[in-house]
Image 1 (cartoon, rainbow, N blue to C red):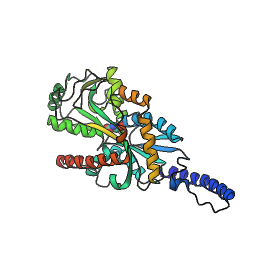
Image 2 (tube, protein in one colour):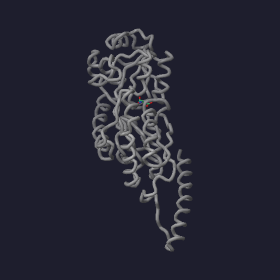
Image 3 (cartoon, rainbow, N blue to C red):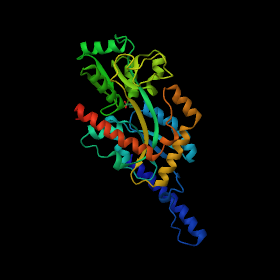
Length: 341
Ligand code: ASP
């Protein structure tokens, strides 16, 4: 990805040189304008949004929903690229090291705030390595199992995993992923330690769950709603204090007898530190436009979520949330004594 980023930078430089030469020829001065530095000409090339999880999963789904209306607002083209691995930290690291020019953007979730407490050599720091662009959405999770898994209710599930701890498999998207955190909360609430099966995203994890290769997992409604409604998985509960409108029959974890299991997954957009502020602002405005798009609102509602309010799709609101979440999860993870290696 760094090679292609350099390639894009070179291609842009050639394009900029062409424009600058034309301005110089017309004005008779030495040119000296630089669209990238001021953000005035931004974007003049494709923008890549890196998703740090597999294609087809919830982070990917939300990104693809907003990419087109963002591109329309920016007057450019957005390409979504999946750079998966290590609970989202591989893709985040790639973006941290990319050119700070607004052409490489990261979509990440709650995992941005958990990774520093989990990984020893992360290679980036959330507050120092990125500019926050804006929050996107906050998504409830669901506890789901392969459809022929024996337990019928969440309480049955707890009893079953306690009795079969050595046999039951719990899928997740790697250490620090939302599914991993939710799985940890489940194990703590249930008082059990299970065998975890890591994937590079919950897209492939859900495929294996439907195929019966793993027993159960937590995942966002943006990934599980379709399979729950179609009866392809067994759903036990939603992990928010309120039920989800699009899945009205699904009880909350508190209603189902496991009040300690509460988590929802916030998402935000990032660019590398040093990206010009007016470029960050343009991206934030494009994000706001996408979140106000009726098609996006409807798609999200169908999948159990909603865009954040416009005032949260801003760099400052996002940074405030990130700071608060780094503190919260840093403590939870330290108390739990969990480490990635
Ligand atoms: N949302 C998933 C998780 O963190 C990862 C993904 O988007 O595939 O568990």
